Image (cartoon, rainbow, N blue to C red; front, side, top):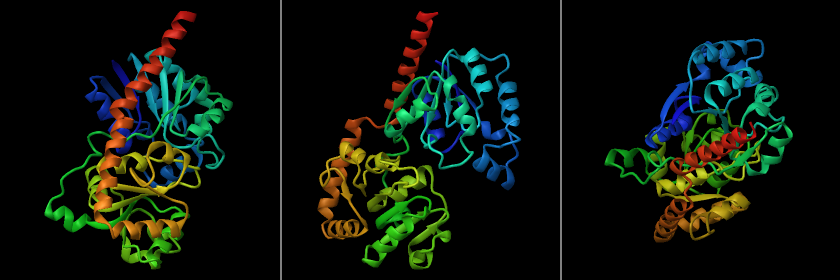
Amino acid sequence: MNLLYVGLDGGTSGQRIAALRRLGHEVTVFDQYRAYPNNKFFRYWHIKTALLGFDWLVDRYMLSKLKGRSFDMVFVDHGDLISPKVVRAFKKAGKVVVNYNQDDPYSDRDGRRWRIFWRALPFYDLVVTTKNYRVEDALAKGARRVLAVRSPADEVIHRPVDLSADDLARFAADVVFVGTWMPERGPLLKRLAERGVPLRIYGERWHKAPEYDSLRSCVVLGNLEGELYTKAIRGASIALGLLSKGYGDLHTTRSVEIPAIGTLFCAERTADHMAMYKDGEEAVFWDDPDDCADKCLALLADPEKIRTIAAAGLARVRKNGDFNKVLLPKIIDEALGVRAEVSQLN
């Protein structure tokens, strides 16, 4: 198919673009974030207000790039700056328009950030969310059809890579967390450190944590993506998957990426996690920080058990099919079904 992909050509969005191309599709990318100056003010104003007063820049940019073009389908990734006017233009150019959003744009938690997204929701043919508990909220905000899916790993990026001696010198660890600081994460990891769990933390903003002085020796500041992210997970015996409490997550991309890389996945017990893996056999789940510490310390004393659970987790995530190469055709098939229904009605 000839697809228009509207999103960032990098990060997990870039992984989806690459996966679509591996699946044989011709993919054109429009990056809406190139529509405005890349400076501190605009980045801040984007996150806080969806470019209030400047959102016309995105409309102008998108419509000028779209002029005279036609596609079989338009795939909008995230879409926080894509207005109803632009979605309607996409529908004329691309027959069917899908929105895929891994965030949680259906609550009022983020203030004005989702104001444009909410207005555009009714104009999408299909809205895809990784938050199955938000389907009714999406419908209530005007979405016409909603598909709930699990967050995927990428079959190329997230795999059991072999680490060189240099990689091991940099990334070997007992227990690792890779991710940005959030207020609820500092106390949990501080408690693990107090309990003697040997931690390594990679990520941004940890210097802002009130617990930073207690965790300083564990922290390597800076974002890890792609191959470096995979190596940091692969180099650890146990990798923690911490949820975002602000968004009410029941699973995240870490929930599939960590087992797919071949490392033991250790996370909070949730309904999603329990449905995805057998606790104690394919992953290890905990109920509170001390429970997490107890389980990490017990596992570190039994390296063979770590290897057994990690191998079983890898087999399970492959059996579950939680990868881009499986998810993206599912979304496309669902969107094509919507398009066929619309054609019959017309």
